[in-house]
Image (cartoon, rainbow, N blue to C red):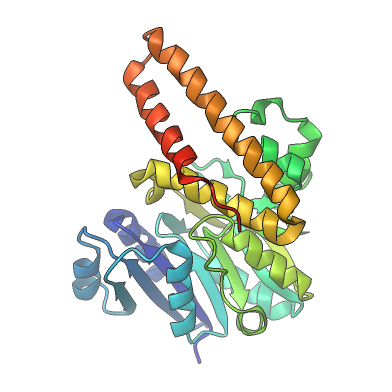
Length: 309
């Protein structure tokens, strides 16, 4: 019996993927039986070749084109045999006994459907990955130029800052860089919603799990390192578009069309403001090439239309 299937979606991050796989393979997972599935989303680097020749224990599902993070995770989930399933980013490294800890917690707590570990940045500092579900106010402030002006209590609640980073606590959702669930949850609610190409898909998944009666847990004693955003750094404009369209899809799905349209209008105003600000800075000669690059990116986002739903 396979106790845990780890699904890793990779796109042109060969060296980081090697470090991730090595960290998993070097983990003492006794007495658990673990399988690793890598879904390669049309990489043009050496990923497929090094996996074929250097990692025979890894099940490789190589796609001929970039199908997107969410769809590739679903391909991996469909192929998985484990009684527990884990989504793990290729730019992560597992620390110590994080995997057996998470498996044991699920085994000992049958009402817990999804669990996420304490995530660290590359330098060992805490990385925020535990969340409550966002309100419209959170969506307006969080990850926009207005974030520094947000009421402290608003973001403290969203980021669940009242608990210690090493604590174990019920939360609303955990980020998908490292997320473990039990097969019963997957069987009951299905895979990730492929309407999200990337971003917010794990929030949606956790919401569906909680709506079905499952608990979501942050396990602060289990640790991983997440180097963060290395695949999406290769496509800056698309990163912005996917992030904002996923946010809009979530709000349309759970808060209605009017709320989503209000948020879309704000986002357009936000990018318009940023274009104006960067244009002024460029005219003044302040880091002109950087400003011009940002202007191009923001224009691409606005031209995309930021579709809702």
